[in-house]
Image (cartoon, rainbow, N blue to C red; front, side, top):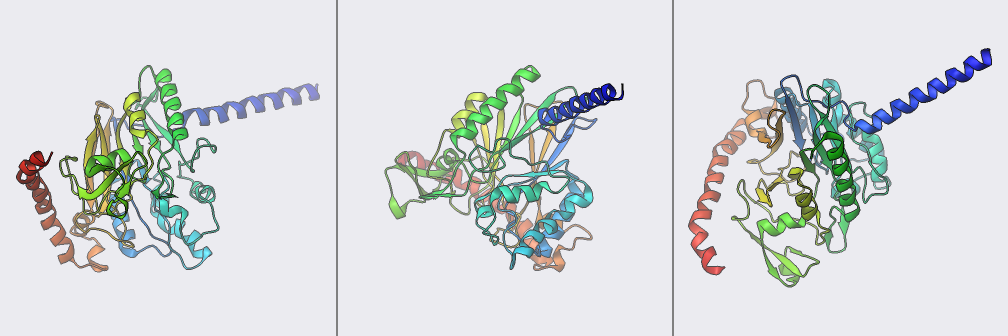
Amino acid sequence: MKKILAVLLAIMMMLTLSSVSFAAEDSKNGNLQFDENGKFEIMLVADAQDGFPIEDDFKNAFNQALDKAQPDLVIFLGDIVMSAETDEEYWAGYGDLLNPLVDRDIPFTLVFGNHDDQDAHKGSTKDEKLAKYMSFENCLAYDADPALHGSGTHNLEILSSDGTKTAYNLWMMDSGDYIEGGYDCVRADQLEWYEGVSKELEADNGGKVPSLMFQHIVPAEVAKEVMFTVKGDLGALGSTNFSDGTAATYLPNIWGFEEGWMFEQACPSPDCEGQWDAITERGDVQAVFFGHDHINTYVANINGIDAVNVPGSTYNSYYDMLAQGFMMISLDENDLSTYKRTMLYTSDLALEEGSKLPDGNHGKAYYQFANIFRPVMNFIVKAMRVILFPFFFWAA
């Protein structure tokens, strides 16, 4: 009798563990859910580019932004933990960066950037670094399919406020690091995975699930939109010579984007394996967000999909005081046909009462100047579109 009971108990335990494992894999949402008011807030951190010890200015800005925004999720857009004197300090940098999230119990996920595979700890792989991130309890990142190009490509589902279905989806794509001729890109096998999971979500939820996509390196299709391109290989005279026989010049096309500005040329891969065609055909991605080019803030609309260059948040690498900060994405379950973008500029944060930022490397006047000149810069770009349009039309 005891043996029979033991066997039955073992079977029940196996079934229970199996169902729990299935449920965890099936949900892929890390308990993300719209709140009772149908709201969900995401904070984007692009190009932190720091290490142990993390810059005090960055930590102060990050902490202040988290307290102000109280996001439901933080997404790091690559080039995250980089510099350190020793291997021990390199790994300690993860805790130094992520402790503000751990202390507030805010979940986070990430995509890798080109520098994440080219940092002080050169003996480690991106898979090992992903495992380090995943060792933090509030990390939701994972590798959906280790056979895919790169590491850490995955999706996160956001449940409806009543928990009955997946209301929204977030795609995290590893855009790689370096290839011959420049940077890497999102590859065909990742796009095939995206299409398959997108169709599964559609079948499970009675229709296409609206979504956003996140990666580090700007897609080639976007660079061709916001930079003037020509047929042929420009060699050293071109900012990027694409594998399709075209080349991007160093001249920004201010008519190729609707918002923001470009203070550096877009730096995509020379290769393209059809990312924009894939997301256009599926019709579920509303916007693609990327970092990489720290001082660009443009938003271009290509085939009805927004391409958003998120400016850098770093205090450790090059940055533009007019744009530096954290981007917020607001989702409203009552209208999932769109989304809202806002910036938490460090210059705004620094001028709030009690901010520690003016006590750091930059005084209050520095941040005040940024706040004064930012609208001026936006006006200049808009004016240039109008003033230069006749010359552009004539040249075309």
